[in-house]
Image (cartoon, rainbow, N blue to C red; front, side, top):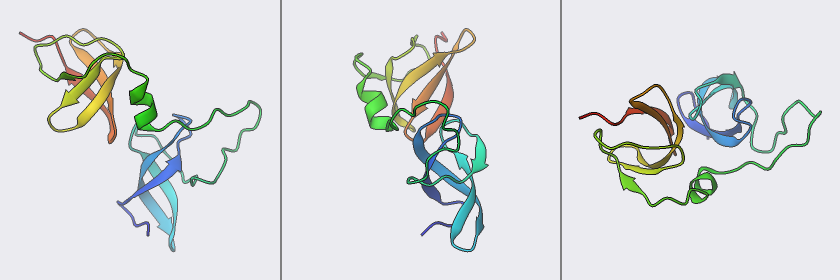
Length: 126
């Protein structure tokens, strides 16, 4: 059963994927507002069986975190602040678990997608 502060699977309007969301507001037993745990966008709840409102372009099937991670071919490397990481590198973090580099940001920072969300990590420090 969903509750405020709890997690539900919902369609994210920004990521265009079925992902875990945190419930922000409910009416009765139904979530009405949620926050995507991946991109942090707050939007109205669209359940797993609900299709997005826009129908002008064909939808690609939702991709799970495991499927996204499986497409990365590099071997997993333990995260260390002194190592350098590139886009699509697989990272094993002691707190967040296994994830992959989704973006290299300003020098010294990378955005890593983990099961629980996207985190900005420092890299290449000596």
